[in-house]
Amino acid sequence: EVQLVQSGAEVKKPGESLKISCKGSGYIFTSYWIGWVRQMPGKGLEWMGIIYPGDSDTRYSPSFQGQVTISADKSISTAYLQWSSLKASDTAMYYCARQNGSSWYYWGQGTLVTVSS
Amino acid sequence: SYELTQPPSVSVSPGQTARITCSGDALPKKYAYWYQQKSGQAPVLVIYEDSKRPSGIPEKFSGSSSGTMATLTISGAQVEDEADYYCYSTDSSGNLWVFGGGTKLTVL
Image (cartoon, rainbow over all chains, first blue to last red; front, side, top):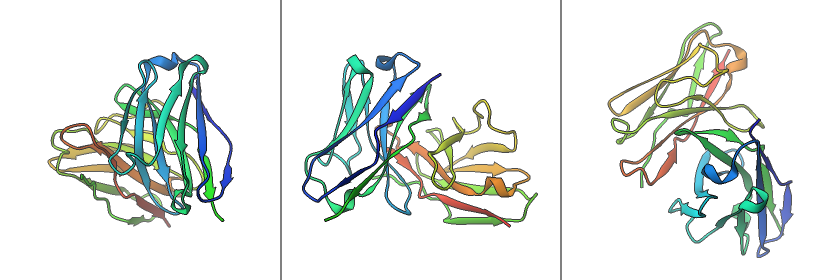
């Protein structure tokens, strides 16, 4: 059974750094793209970027280029989303998702990030 | 930039057919996908490649696409279908991935 399990909720202060994770299981981790999606409180879904763990090919949506870093550690089947300096506007639910064919079919449960002074 | 436009809300009575539209300039050449998101839950794929239904999705959900508009149809909508629905596609280059703004379906 394919599963994406994300790390737990985080509460951080502005300016702090953060790395959240998405661990894949039940499939060959290096063979499928993983993407990250942001959902701000009460708002819609926004694509942030994707990574192919097999060769770490990473692509960012223009709105998020330079704002976050997406990475993966294939030795532990885990993808990451990180910030070097959080802002209050980074407060959101973050989802990881895995492709199946042409679709983003499998989704993690989400990680809530709260940034507040 | 590229945008997919959805109506903010659609409301139907139980048993009626709900239709949610998604317009985008690249839709004649690119597939549309539809996600259902219930309150507090992760999105669930209900339609892929314009009109295909993933395993486990009820037949009441169907999709179509014509020209610059894709449509999600929910036949015989029930209260349990109340959710936010998002279309997803890419721009003509395939390098920019976009969700529509979402449509809140109310069944009452």
